[in-house]
Amino acid sequence: MRPVFTGAEVRSAEQPLLDAGLGPELMRRAAHGLAQHVIEVLKGTVSAGQLAESRDRRGRRRPHAARIYGARVAAYVGTGNNGGDALYALATLRRRGVHCVALLTGERCHAAGLAALRSAGGRALSISDPEAPAVLERADVVIDAMLGTGSRVTDEPRPIELIAPAEHVHIVACDLPSGVDAATGRAEPGALRADSTVTFGAVKCGLVMGEGRQLAGEVRVVDIGLRPYLPEARVQHVEVHTAACSDSAPPWNAHKYSRGVVGLIAGSEQYPGAAVLTARSAVNAGIGMLVACPPEGASTVRQLLLGALPEVVVSEHADDGVRERISAWVLGPGVGEDQRLRDAVVQVLDSGAPAVLDASGLAYTGPGAAAGPLLLTPHAGELTALLTRCGEHVTAADVAKDPLRWTRRAAEAYGAVVLLKGPETVIASPAGHCRVVTGAPSTLATAGSGDVLAGLAGAEMARDRELVNGPGTATDERVAGRLMAAAVTATVRHARAGLALGAHGFAASGLAAALGAPSA
Image 1 (cartoon, one colour):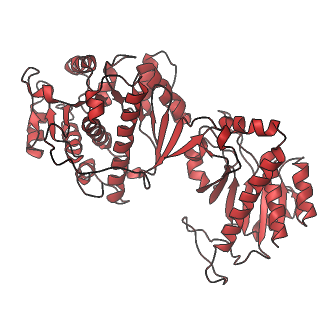
Image 2 (image 1 turned 45 degrees about the vertical axis):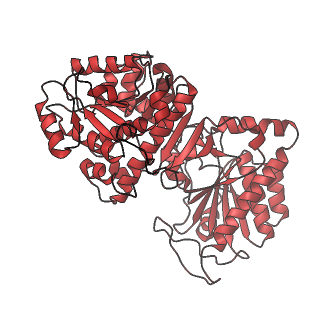
Image 3 (image 1 turned 90 degrees about the vertical axis):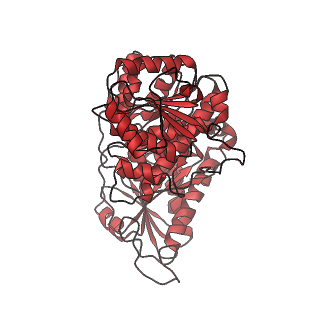
C-alpha cells in the first residue's frame, strides 16, 4: 500500500515551508525531479545509443531522441507555481544542451522561472504564436504544466483547448495532468493523456481514481521534503498486481471449524445461481465449511447447491445446532425482496456475528444496526439507496463523481466498513480511513461477479479468528482495520482471478472456480 493525499493536504504540508521562506527551494527541488525524469525519458527511448523508433503501451511512437544534447522539449506553462516548476526544469534541461521552448498559456507566468529559462538560453512563446504548432511537432517530449493541485472540476465543464502535440511525443504531466481534480480524479473535457506524471511530495488521490488514473500514465513521486509535515494518510492505494496477499497453509493442528465456517443466505427461485456462485467462491477461498440456509420454499436453490457442491451443509432450521458453528455470515445475494431475509438480517446483526450484506441484504439494515463487525458491499446505485435512508440527497452520478466522500459517509452512518464496487474499489471505515484498490480487469463487470466477491469477503472474515472471537463493531478502529484487511484481500483475490482468466471475458462461474487455483 502507498499513502495518497488530497491536493489540499499537500498544500497544507507545504505552508510551513513557504512561511519559512523556502518556497523557491521547494520549486527548485520539484524542477530538478521533473528535469531528471525528462532526461530518463530521453535516454530510454532507444538502446545502444542508436536512433530508432519504439512504441509505448498504447502503440504510439516514442521520442526519436537517442541523446540528451540536441533533443527538443516543449512545455505548456500556466500562470501558477506549476508553470514555475516547468520553467525551472526547462532551464536545467537547456543547460544540458536540450532545445527548450515554453508555450505560455496565459498573459503572465512565474517571472523568476521565466528569467531562469531565458538566462539558460531557452525560449518562451505565447501558445497563440504562429510558431507554436511547429514547436510541438518537432518536440520529443512535451511537459504539461498548465494547472496544478488547486484545480477543481465542477459540474460546469471548462474545456481545455490546446494545440495537440504530435502523435510521437511523450507527454509528461507536471504534478498531475492539467484539468484533473486532485481530490477526486474527475477531469475537464480535453485534458491531455500523459505517458507519465511526475508528482511532488506525495501521490494525490486524483492520480489513482477515475479519469485521473487513466490520464496520468506511469506515476513518479519526487521527494521535496514534505514528509514531516504531511498528516497521517487517511487513504491508502492498493495495486492489484503488487499487493501483498497472504495465502499461507493452515497450521498443522487445524480442523474444519478452526479454518472458518461461513453461513450463507443467498439465492431464490428467480436467482438460484447466486447461491452457487457465492458458495463456490467461499469454499474455494480456503474455509473449512459452508453452511447454506436457503430461504424457505427455495427448493431449486437447495438442489442446485448440493448438485454443484456436495461438501456444502444445508441447514433448514435455525435450531438444528449447525448454525452455532458459523464464524461469519453472507446475507443477500440473489434473494430479492423477502421478509424472511429481513428477519435473518436482523437476527444476525443483533447476534454480533461478523456479516457481509450484499445485494438484497443491503435493504434490510439501518444506520448503527449492527452489534458486530459488518461489511456492506454495494455498487453505486445501492450506495445511493443506503445514503438516502440516512437522510442524504444523492444520486448514483454524485457517487461516481466523488466515491471517496460518499463511501466514507455511508460507513460513518451505518457503523460499518463499506466496500463500493466500481472501476476502482473504494473501501471505507466509519472513522474515514480508506483503501482504493486499482488494477482489476474490466472483464469483472459480468453478472454474478458481485456474488463471487461477497463469498470471498465472507470467507476472509470467517478465517480471521480475532475478528470472529473478539467483540466490537466497525466503530472500533481495531475491528475496522481487520474488516478492511479482509475486504482488501477479497478484492485483490477477486481481481487476480479475473486477470488469470484473460482479457476476452468469462462467466462468473469460471471466476469462482478460478479462485481454487494456486495463483489466485
